Image 1 (tube, rainbow, N blue to C red):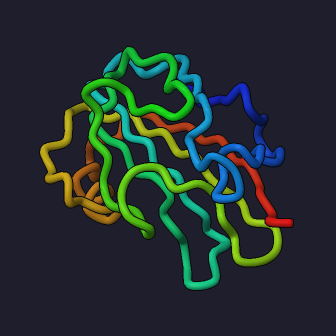
Image 2 (spheres, helix red, strand yellow):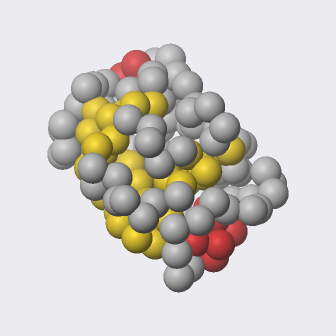
Length: 145
């Protein structure tokens, strides 16, 4: 399974458009080679370099496993978004200082998740336990000028 973006390649700078300094919308993400046993996909975007520990920027679950693209500024039809460190929905990179890494982590599960909309990344991780069939990640960096 692979996750890529037309906005940046692995290890490159995330364009300002997708950050708090720009439009603060999610970049287009392309998904390929999803595992044949996948019943749903989960996307978690986080910053492990945040001063207070890993900061969650986006949590989306129950993405249909046939999804090939998450269009810029959108959520896949039928998918659910949970709570992040800022609110809910996508919150782009906004590091207080220095270069931070942002991981777009994609997980293929052998089931759909039955969790409330008030769920956060910890709830999603708990619900995923024992159901992971594949994973992939994309990493970009950002530093505020």
